[in-house]
Length: 140
Image (tube, rainbow, N blue to C red):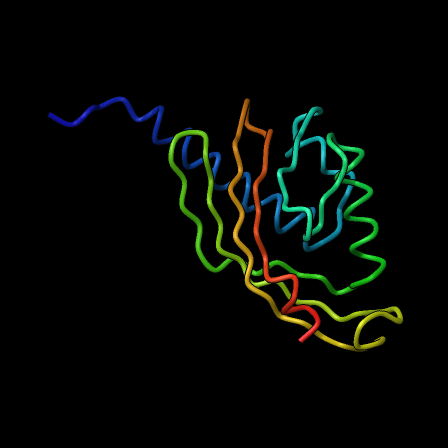
């Protein structure tokens, strides 16, 4: 017989919505003041070394996002798919942006790359994040 307790399903949906909202508001809109609403104080990123790796905690995330916005003022993470189970949320993303500084390809060079993210949610906030994106695609 199916469970009539909807609390776990509601928690999973809330986690999914919170992670998607963090992408939209913090990463896409650049509202860094909203970081404490979506990320734990001791947030840890497990990004690969060849990607965008940053220091633990909210301050490290703020530094990364500030640098990202400086290089790519129009940076955007397009959510293609989102699946949640328990305290985990997985996203398939398509990231886009236009380079503002002299770097591989020079100012004005646009990119579009595939990205995957796994977030662990604790207490309604992102506590850990794993990701893999096509870094080399940014330079193609």
